[in-house]
Image 1: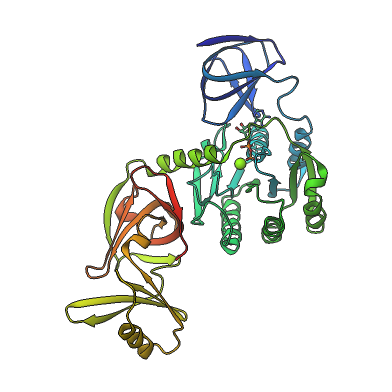
Image 2 (image 1 turned 135 degrees about the horizontal axis):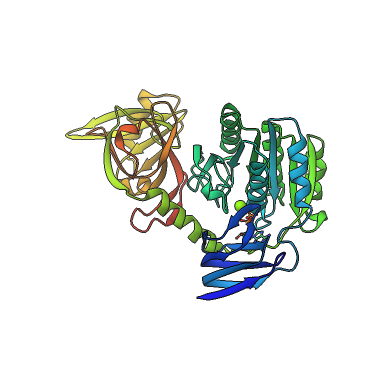
Length: 415
Ligand SMILES: Nc1ncnc2c1ncn2[C@@H]1O[C@H](COP(=O)(O)OP(=O)(O)O)[C@@H](O)[C@H]1O
Ligand SMILES: [Mg+2]
């Protein structure tokens, strides 16, 4: 346990995991006012700065401490706050930058400052790999009710299940999801909608995605966080043709490596799977909305006392069987469905542990789950989830596999 004293205008940075207690004084953390009596948990692989507005005394347990000279975020970040505050409402802002450039921190800072001014602030978190609002692999929408230290504290209003921790191969869904969450934010009469994004921006693919996202949501302003202006110059040039751009310098950042990112996701899965159990839902009452399996029409072929189930989806077939397809069965399928060109055999292992998104009868996001088994004979599907079975009406099957035991990502799978 460590006690430190800060004079007015001094700033200390605390790296997690740590517990901080403000014993005396007033300060600011990412634009949020904090004062005596407040305790703050600094999460794993993250850093939180305390900026003293008056002489302060802090008690710190764990973590690493360093001092930050001057104000804790670049003073230019204030320009963004002023710019957004004076624009006609509702105002839509998109925040882009490289991985670990401080996008979520800037989003937090702007959100707090605008909240203090009395605006209704919504955040669309489209960073599916390092989600703060909503579970990993989803695009979350939150609306602020209080000042926040981290975006995670914003109450979740709705989410869109992308089904992967990267938008790679899912650009269409990423854009649909961001547009849907933006629409929902505006339906809630948000004055300001801040869209946080993934750090995939430097190569051409990432840039194309961001440009198209901007075209779809029509932001009033795109804020670009950059270290060296040249790095994102191409993006800035193109997006400037679409809307206004504000370029801001990066602040102090605690970078995260691959393992830390994975661990952060694991913690998030644990949080959203808490209280999970294995449940069985009827395939008759639950519909599969999207995903690469179970959305097509299910057919059956009888072979003696065995039944073989298969799904026709466009001109491909997925056969749910333990073994490879024999010629006889393939011919039977071809005979019934002349347009079918290829078949793919899926056994129980192939589909076990796929991440799923769960929606209720009004197609509102209810949570995530893990697919365990599909029993075509008994027409039921087994899933591991904390969601109450009464609210499970629609499912979407994702591309990530999660262990229901350790709640870690165990693979990626496109069926
Ligand atoms: N100005 C700052 N002072 C202290 N820590 C910061 C600052 N800006 C960012 N960080 C820390 O750096 C880490 C990465 O920043 P983050 O905003 O999550 O990056 P990104 O969203 O671009 O991946 C976070 O732990 C955050 O707390
Ligand atoms: Mg982020």
